[in-house]
Amino acid sequence: MNNAKTKKRSVALCYAVNFLIAVILTSIGPSLPRLAEYFDLNYADLGLLFTFEAIGFTAFTFLSGIIADHIGKKRTMMLFLIMLTVSVFLWAFSLNYSFLNIMILVMGGGIGIVETMSNALLSDLSEEGEKTYQINIMQCFFGLGAIAGPILIGLVYSYGVSWRSVYLFLGFAFAAATVWFFINRFPPLPTAEKINLGDMKTLLADRKFLLICLSMLIYTGSEVGSWGWMAEFTESVMYFSVVESGAAVAVFWTAMTVTRLILARELHRINMRKLIMGLSVSAGVMSALMGAADSKAFVWAVIALLGVACSGIWANVLAYGAENYKKYSGTVFATLIASGGVGNTLVPGLMGLSGERFGLRWSLSIPAVLFCMIAVLFVIIPRLKSPAAETVETRLK
Figure (cartoon, helix red, strand yellow):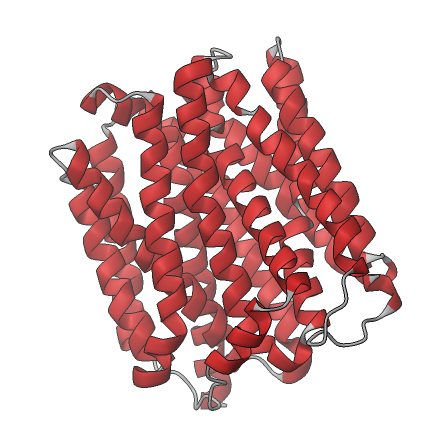
């Protein structure tokens, strides 16, 4: 009975941490206009913030498995929860743009490792038959945080609260989560599968796997670029209020989260590759339409439909890779997640440079093209021969 209660508290802690991670990630978009005004930044400067956050995320995600192999998942998560909390507080006290970049790099690293370790711990806490269910539920908590964050932060900004006060509050929220983690007693956990460098070498020599990684890179960068710049686009180009621009990001995440729940129940009936292709083209079309929009009502509708289109791509690209390369599951998971981090490093920053030179409307053409590229890649991928890949089920082909 004590183990059952301990397990429930530990699972709830993983959910809460992912909720907070989503809040901190989606807080950046609504904060961009405040940061631009305070530090006198242009779109290219703001795009670099996304780039530095993604560099930290990617680098530390690559290292997370190695660190956990040496000191354990719980100690790794504790250490980087502390680092993440400190970086949020220091971000709130930033005095110049250079320090902002340094702190968001450290913050991105903390987010990458804490998110990875919380997912790994949840997997260890789950019985074999309920792992997928629990991870889906945690994704829903992430979605709730992504919905609540922009709405609440946009509302707070509308009352004249400074960006520094917002991040001080978020720092205290992460400090509370850190204390909870420190005092929480976890039940006994199974021995973890270690990252195998030999497996990684085999996979990185496999053209089919590299194209799956490229798909993950393109999708994650395009998705983060889309919602990361959404608040700035709606506020500065479409003249939304501060509250409305925060709500726009929340609408995107609401549509995505609700559709994810529906898809989770129906995935066993759907051809995974065709789903990825259809949703990718739809996401590309919605991105292009948002850039061409000339009315608020149209923008609201397109944002919701973009959330629907993005709902099933990330998880299914990940699942496609895992199903094709079951023998290398641990290494496949780490490599695909890190590939997404590389996309985060490139695409939002490129959108910022494009927005500075040509305007934010034109910058939306970047994710529009990239989303459609995923569909092209998934026409090519099944045609490639791969000695490392296993025979896959019909629904993947």
